[in-house]
Amino acid sequence: MKIGIDGRAAKWYRGTGIGTYTYQLINSLNKVDSKNDYLIFLPNGSSLNLKDNFAVETAEELSKKNFWDDVRTPNTFPYHDMELYHVPQNGVGLSENINCLKAITLHDIIPLRMPETVSDRYLNIFNNELPKIIENCDGILTVSEFSKQDIAKEFNFPKEKIFVTHLAAEDIYRPLNKDLCKKNLCDKYGIKDDFILYVGGFSPRKNILGIIEAFSLLDSTIKKDLKLVITGKKGISYELYKKRTEDLFISSSVIFTDFIPLNDLPTFYNASKLLVYPSFYEGFGLPPLEAMACGTPVISSNVTSLPEVCLDSAILINPYSISELKLSIENVLTDDTLRLTMIQKGLLTSSLYTWENTALQTIKAYETILGT
Picture (cartoon, rainbow, N blue to C red):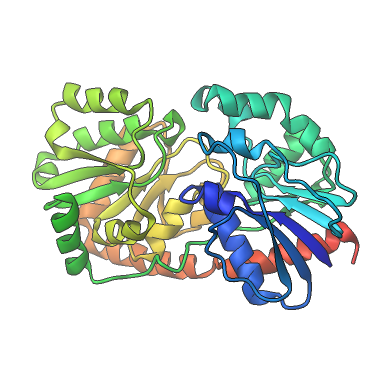
């Protein structure tokens, strides 16, 4: 097979789910496939070290002001011999003028299900461009069975042309010395106390207000020497979240770290008492899997893709129930047997997901789309 892949998100969007997926997909295909030929469109300065059956075409550098604006400009294809071209970033940037079969990875359809939780720019892409993109592609890859059913229903797209390729935690997420991790966080971030952790974006879809509310209700003996650490770039919702901590008189116990470099995230997971991830909607949801891979208990939602990803290794709660979230946090923090069981199950579940498996599933999807 001769496969082309738009790899721009591997550099321009690294640190997000789509950027991580694109980087790891190319990296893992490079590890497992010496048979097929790949042409990867990458910006200058990308760190991927590719084998001889991987050729690189330099992608044009644009404004770098906004990923979605930049990536909407398709790559150019003079004289390229491809049988299949794959765009991993929800199909955005898929050119109509390609003389080969076309595939996209559509991670989820959150803008269509919860439009109030995304930017106007992103919503416009989904409303005005995505239907045409889907008409122009010969196969769709997605990241969960939940998303497959969601996509098929929304676009009336044949299920036999939608292929599930689960994601995985990156190799940096593994159990580390917890005392050393706590010391590192104290030295670098000034976090001295025990804490529960949230990792992810600041979208209202992530239910950060619910986390803050539940934390405020914890039993005083539990909350006394405990912090809530909320990581992620402070988006437009930050002031709302900060004000809520002040209204609830817990602002001194809630730490907003702002953006955390990728290499520091395993330290946060390992040092935390548990991860809370009561999201209202996820196409996959990597943070629970990353936390499990670090040996950290997880409380997550019982909706959308999260039960599929977490299996029986997390406590799954109704994200609309603050009391259920609060009680689950208290149970994990006070029941040592429960914590140990969750840690053991989480490590097992996280080991079931590997990027090598993602790559192998992707190759099978390519073969099916091409009829080989």
